[in-house]
Length: 296
Image 1 (cartoon, rainbow, N blue to C red):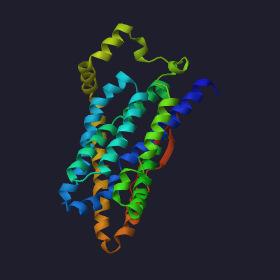
Image 2: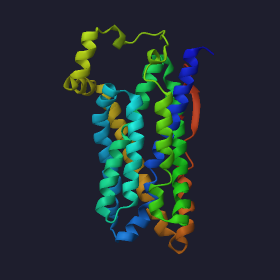
Image 3: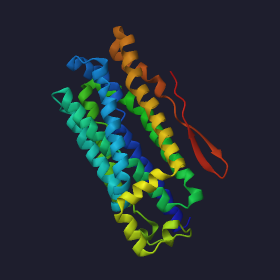
Image 4: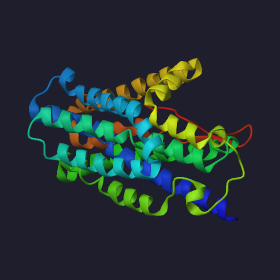
């Protein structure tokens, strides 16, 4: 195995593992919703705001952070996002009002948006165009596995220590892994002393063009919003997230209330529908495709 392939393997593994723990700081909220609702005697509409503020912060973060990732590099941004997401989770854990919960959870959504764009940027930098499906597929598989286990894990934590610890224990590895990631990963093959064998459009730009493109954020956003294919992918991804968060927010609450006589045991039962996600198969030129099935 040559030096480039070793680095590509390392980038794939470390980036995917780092993003695996990102999900520990995001989807853990699903198991805590019934307990937060009970603590402050909230309506379903009010407690549903947890999903609203998380996704709102995430959407704003995705819109802004893509440009920041280009400016400062995915290595710094993914690391910073993991640390700040941990801080936001800690803030929720000590909240004395539901307003504090919403504030911390909105901030967490924004910080979580440092992650996925950084992953994609790293795979773009380290892999040729026809070789990016495999690392991204592996990344998707691990994040799906993470979302599969975080809610049952949260259930165990709730039963043992209470709902506030869900915003402490699962995110502790996130900061540690983020720091390890920063120490070991490099943004580009050139940063590791490796010469790429493929050429990208960006390589053909002059230094002056690159500098202008990096500083002209308006042009960057105009370009991102001008291609109908890209806009279609935005809408498609938004629809999938709408369905995902509807499931994560309301299915646990529904089953929790449905199993009222055995509420604590239901913390483990209600998450059967999370045993999903990991259907992978080879397709075409060897790209790894990840499918998702939700089981109720």
